Length: 457
Image (cartoon, rainbow, N blue to C red; front, side):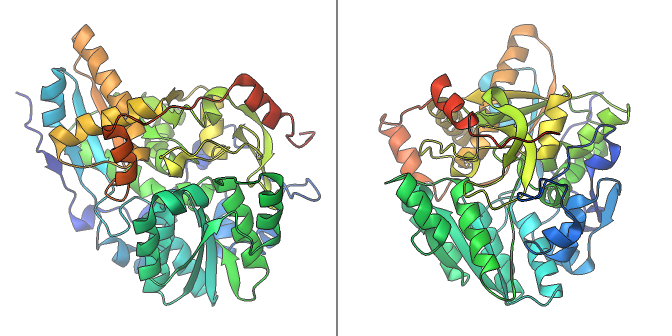
């Protein structure tokens, strides 16, 4: 007799993971080393520590330690909103008429509204422990900026956020949440940094990108004593902190004897996706399990599905280290889509290497299809999803409908990593029928890729 799965599977507080998992430790072929942008040699902890907090720099370069203890101060903070629920989407299953079992890991049950707080509190903690005055960062849709603002407020630290200009204008309420937590928020590219002025001169009227905002935030950190730069995605240290999502997901499934067939996550820089899939990918790497892992990205910024696996700058201003990743070119500026958190030209080196090894799939989806999936989900599941998470919803629905055709009762798991209550401008455009899709031409992508740095490695 099948065990009845509750609508929401909650782990007990004592069941929350006490360690983060580093999937690189189980990868026989490791991600390529990060390079110094000047010497093109692999960066050292000392060099990275000029940009990032020292402990975070160590985490970034450690590819052999499988588990890192989560400091007690961070675990105590996590307890305010973790463990987060794994929800069985019974109503969506019924609406679709599918035999598939659909689960989503809901990370929107905290003030920041997304999974970003998992890493924000860790990075703020290490900055405080190092005795810094404050940190600088970038944000796309605003979830990361909101999370970091909250974390810095908790530790009584200064927080300076460079918010991608199109999101700064489209999402004023998320901007105001950051300011409520005491953050200084600047639209990027701005006229307050050398790099911002240069980008505005080269791309007049630009709506900005995460690559632009990263450059400005790094410059701001390096020009102020007692400050370091922190990043909300892409870096392996961030995927490490976000592994708590996947670890909790797997523990919740194991609690009821459920084996996932596929795990689906939206993909921009890779923090949500990498955090969700890492323990499952680890099992695959160790030969202990087999899963279908799917990365879903916007068709307007298709780094995995149409990019090139090569060394590239992590930022538009070319001041950050180089990383081997699937990229569209650091000069590629995506259209002003409403999934601001996914408008990044590249992808995490860990996610890129897993994809290159054939351990995961990637799909790109159009904005109009994404928002229709978001509306369909909201009408039956009672949560208004963020545009970013809705990319995963779209593919989860697609896979569930395939099961309807074949009669297979597969277990589908996806990450719902944010809420859409500050994205009503986008929903309005969808509801009014005036939302548009933008798909870059091969020529546009080729033009940006032609400027990739020449690296002989």
